[in-house]
Length: 578
Image (cartoon, rainbow, N blue to C red; front, side, top):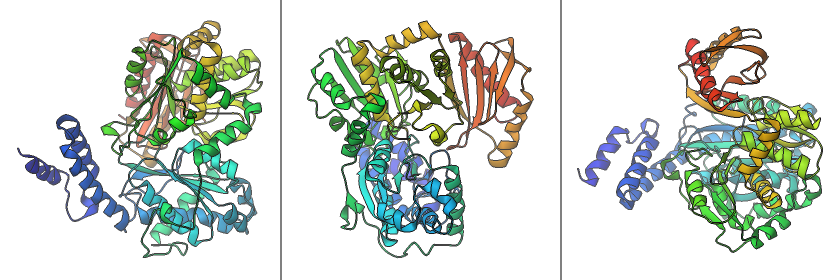
């Protein structure tokens, strides 16, 4: 079959025609990416053509989103062109502005927004950016149009990362930020993150109102805050926005708070530049961090700083762009070939809010690294204070806190749940590879994690795997695992099915690896976490961002983890979700 015949058949299979709503553009793109990988770059022009069709859908779509707008644990996510397009993004922006229009008459909103009046919000303005996703700049243009037309200052960062934009809110004293990103989701997704003046993920009191108001606006076919009929242009082409160097602002925040967290940015970078025993390899997976790494390392000119997948590719070469063991292989293989004594590898997701580490031999997820960060700040840096980690995260940090005589704060999943302990906890982190520290932003930030990891290696003169082994030798080893499975039902039906797990209560026996385990404690603040007498546990909860049920387990032995995973799957099958 010729190339022309192949493309014609693919168009037919994916129902590509005159009606955007009926066309499965991303199924076609995935197949074209596979062909590009297998047969060569001659397929790139067809990928570009399909993205041209998607751009037309983004600009012209006047239908409601296929999936109703919902702000979950980290904003709103949906399909490019089908859920997020110029019209829907404009309406959601209007729904956010309605919060500020209301604050003068509803002062109870002020503590959540961090502003006391509409005029204050307009003057302080919005920090605006996007990651590398297709359509990000045009979505930013739609947001800018609504903001400027309603009197709001726009601090424009362009392509950037979540942690950097969060730092900009604090350093510029902005009223809020909007970041067009779906984080680690696959290539067909776009997203919309909104942070209020505290620079952290918005509180439920705000996201609930945004969700409801956005749906009202969409159902009512518009908002007085959105001017219809105007063409959307890039914010970079406007003269009524305020561009700024977002990474320079991030560095400013880190330097300003060095006495709080003890992480000395300039000293770390100078030490790395002069230390020929250390090599660093960073995989950006084609995401926004690729544009920052060289500057983040202060222009250090050395072959000991290796950047992987640092080119622009909105298809991510067909992979799921997340920090995962599979995606870590290139970093691991790169480090294995190096002769340096000290090796640090990291993989960062597209919007730079998640990071995972390796030393070329041992992979270290945030379950372990968050606890290591707490140990490092508390025991090496001499900082005293509590630790905060989500309920689905390893209990290694709990063990450290117990021995240190400190408190462990353990809320439901979602970085916004750390708000009560911002400025109190030395480290706050979640198992899905997000972290921040005291004196930094209340938003997860891969760059502060990277800086902290490099500080550990340089200060202790040992690889992260060796540091972890020391901690486990003293405090005990923990073996966490997680997974997500698509389910047969959603919405209220899913909630009803998960309620069946309530029969697994304290005192109940569960068959794990052919042996009975007795449940000694249940935590139900977010799904159901069942803790057994030996300290192992399993947890089941619905995903806040995808049509999946997620389960998390932790054993005190390597072999026990597999048995807990099987037990969690058996529970889901028993209640009819698989």
